[in-house]
Image (cartoon, rainbow, N blue to C red; front, side, top):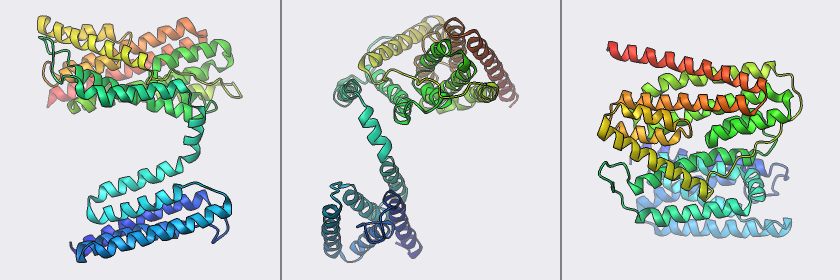
Length: 424
């Protein structure tokens, strides 16, 4: 190992300890100096010690490094025990954190520095989220916990048992792939659900719209329509939140499609980026024009990890995938556009996944992109119609105008992309 590489790895080990130490010190910043077992200096030295022990182990063997690690662990546990007895605090987080920092310091020297650095950031983030995570656990219901446990069981136990091959003549029904994609979509939705649950009911309409857009923008649109009917003064603000939810649903579709087929990024983003910008600008305009004051009602969304919802989406994905491949085999790739228009009324994710998969083997990239964009446009129009029929007139008209502008912006962006692509 070259000298520069050694310095870089030891510096990373020290930086990981500093990062965790800053978080630990901030959590206990009200304690007097010397009143805590470990702070920024201790954790920084722990990370550095991990790096040094790994370096020494490579040079002379692992007997001395093992003794150093054991001595550090014993000393840290003893001092932590003394502090716990004095403060009547029985948390073991500091002890575990110190060992993690020590291990990451060793990892920085022995293995991939990127993995060590990322692990340090994740560790610090997890420690910093203490209050939010504890608050979420206090608000978590048994149904949410049970649904997550059942779903994890079906994923890690049932998924490996499913056949990883198409079981129909047209290759549209692969049980392993369909279930895996279903779980991934539920996980993406759960991120938004957790964001709303952790932030609490006072997060605000715009935040709820953004987070809810990753769960179900249709549910957000309907929820805001109901709230607008109950509190008409907030209609413009609710329309802004629904617009942000629509923007997030387009962003989500773009990410999902390009994760399956990276070649779809440019054609899809050429339409979704202008549409997202239009939605965001419209939401800012509506917030400025809103005269409502005070807090709006909280947004309630169903848990996307609830088993019934997962199975329904899985069934929808299977139907869309099977029908798409069947029609393409019988009628040609153009039939995918009709499937997209129909399926977009109910759901955008299923046709996005199906079209992205088809773009890798059965249809042209542009055809798959057009299918996804058609489904997105139909989905946006459907939500605008729901807003007009379910909420106040002001809420529905505003969202309908936002939607028309976003679709027009996206269409112009896609046409420009086609012209540029055709000119090359």
